[in-house]
Length: 267
Image 1 (tube, rainbow, N blue to C red):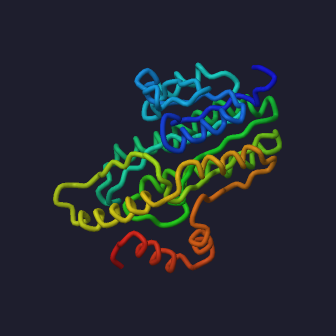
Image 2: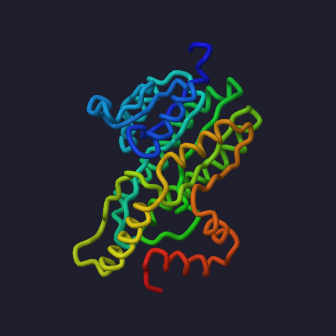
């Protein structure tokens, strides 16, 4: 590592969206950035970020996670960004698909974090950032499994933060509201489902909100602020500060009703 390099950063899901924006911001600041995507060989030149080395990672496959870990050098900054967001009724969500979603959104990032935190603890420095979601904080219809996985991420991060603090390792969660990005949304809906109309209304409202939402650079800028902070907050919510305040201070019944109206769900 050259003297002017700030350290080695690993950003998962760095081929598009929030991960790409974070990888670009880190590379521009002088970090040696490793980005992951499912198949770096198939990544178009236009989607590559200058100064970023790409390694393959499919979080749904444990062997792929293990293979990445074996290739990693010492990591000073880990950004667990890659994930997926299936939508559908909680009643109908296939259990096997829920397990896969937890593998992608929780168990895979957990395994990578465990692998790199050991070196951070021994060197007595390092930062782990989890890209979570506001859906772990507020009720979100038809996102039950995604919300549950992101809630698990936040709980894991909070415990880890307390455990490694004395070793000089920092841990933080960034929880975006709607961001104009390309996170895939697989629709899981049974044929003839009684939830079909409600799901279509909710998705249409979300799609409109996402289309009008801030871009991914907003999240990247918040991550860069966390990187620069010697004591970053445990949770940084990105976007909609008023609703964030209401979620934290109003009774759950009122928050639930407000959330339902926001997405066009009947009460």
